Image (cartoon, rainbow, N blue to C red; front, side, top):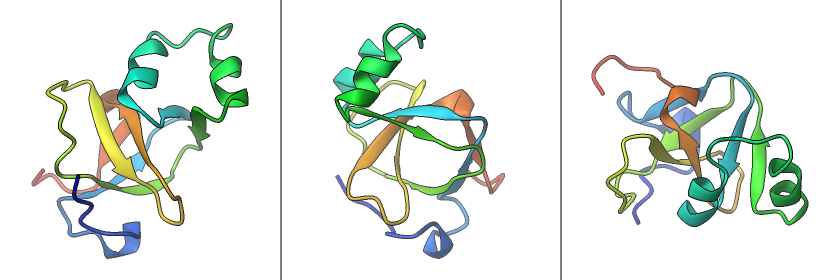
Length: 100
């Protein structure tokens, strides 16, 4: 996978996104799939195991251009100062450029 930037502030216009609403972000695609639909009974166990992190509303991130998954509901992002990439649901992402 190639990350185009390490900081949202340095994303090109077509790659910068903002998280809309508090969004569960899954470290692996398997965990992303297992957390759908988000269930208040399942999510705490994923968070406790550090497999899912809640990203607060307004978090800026960069799209990972080669995510390797053909699922339009899943978007792989890199959050500034985070050591891993996260899968988020497409409806929790606002593209900051209409060109994307």
